[in-house]
Image (cartoon, rainbow, N blue to C red; front, side, top):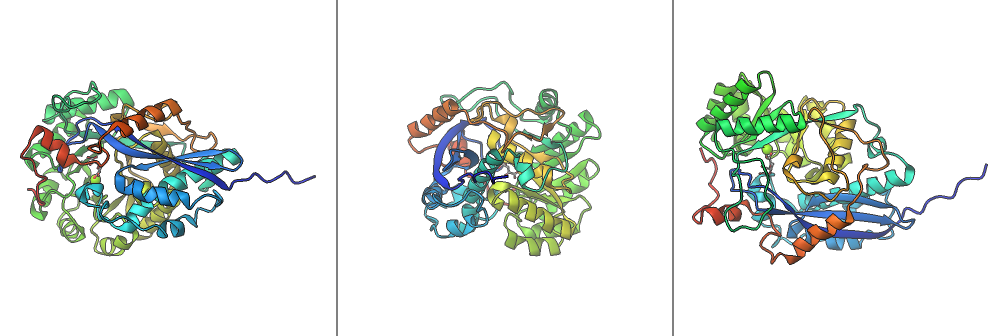
Amino acid sequence: MPTPPRRDLAIAEVRLTPILVADPPLLNTQGVHQPYTPRLIVEVVTADGTTGVGETYGDTGYLGLARPFAQRLTGRQVTDLNGLSAVADEVAVDRTRAGARLDMGGLRGVQTADKLRLSVVSAVEVACLDAQGKALGLPVHALLGGKVRNEVEYSAYLFYRWADHPEGVACEKDDWGAALDPEGVVAQARAFKERYGFGSFKLKGGVFPPDEEIAAIRALAEAFPGHPLRLDPNGAWSVRTSLKVARELGDVLEYLEDPALGTAAMAEVAAGTDVPLATNMCVTTFPEIEEAFTRGAVQVLLSDHHYWGGLRNTRELAAVCRAFGVGLSMHSNTHLGISLAAMTHVASTVPDLHHACDTHYPWQSEDVVTERLSFEGGRIAVPDAPGLGVTLDRDRLAALHARWLADDGTLRDRDDEAAMRVADPGWVTPAVPRW
Ligand SMILES: O=C([O-])C(=O)C[C@H](O)[C@@H](O)C(=O)[O-]
Ligand SMILES: [Mg+2]
């Protein structure tokens, strides 16, 4: 039988489309989310006309790196994923743009040029896998070795929030209402359960004094007995405060996430409590693993394929965690359907993923895919269609890009501190430990 002709999977074009997507007024220890937040959509087009899509952070520092990186990719094979990092290394990171604001002043841990590169590489890696899958008629999970589960469980990501952005600020409205006390948090959790069926709840803390956040978790425990609960103040507490919270909530918490800042403080907290500690702050790069794991500072690692460098790196990270007996889950930041699909594919291939993954997706009313991914019982069915199983909505992409073009630069870098100053002109992100 004659061998069928090989498809030409050389990269002919990489399209980068920065967009601004609506974001509600979610509070964290830094401030509040902007009304629109930047994301970057990546399309990789092969010589035979197959297009793969990826998504990552869209702040200007990422764009400044993504553009020269994309130019170097034409002519390379979409299958050459191991070569992507070396190409990214050829591109100098503009350090003046990789400033504190880019990484949210540390909400996602250390900032390094490598981490910035990995965040851009991840979107291209996902796009290449999507293109490969479409060309071969295989889902991305099959390219990663195959799924070991048919559904991936996600956790409701509860936020203290205002009903609306400050008066006079251009924004998209939603119907969630305010949540600024235990009653508001429980009402939000009920809405999450009703709309999406989530069975576990994470509250973003570090916003109010710890006693108020303890009361909110207690109220959740009463309203949803037996449901796993997590509290994440993004390192806003001292070791002493962290231990007090752990004592008071130890009977109801699945884990406490980044109660204190940095590996040393986390190790001290871990030594004083049996409550497992999770992180997406003190371990966000491979070089940080050894110290944190050998000191017992972390019991659950929240991976994030964007800054860990892609789906294959996420699987390598899972293997390291397994070797150290550290649990694995997933961190989430404002993301759209492309990244949720990517998270779901890789999560479906990791055997020891025993905690529901975080996702901001329900907070995002806008998307660039034709059909939004939907949660049933808090779970997403792992797509079996070729590639990621999502289709780009070009009209929506163009509309959200037009918003980015129309912005004078104010919103192109996410800055929760500046967004808070609109409501509270004297606001300065508090130094940590805040309490
Ligand atoms: O610590 C975390 O889980 C995050 O960093 C998630 C997000 O950054 C969240 O805190 C946010 O967007 O305000
Ligand atoms: Mg966190």
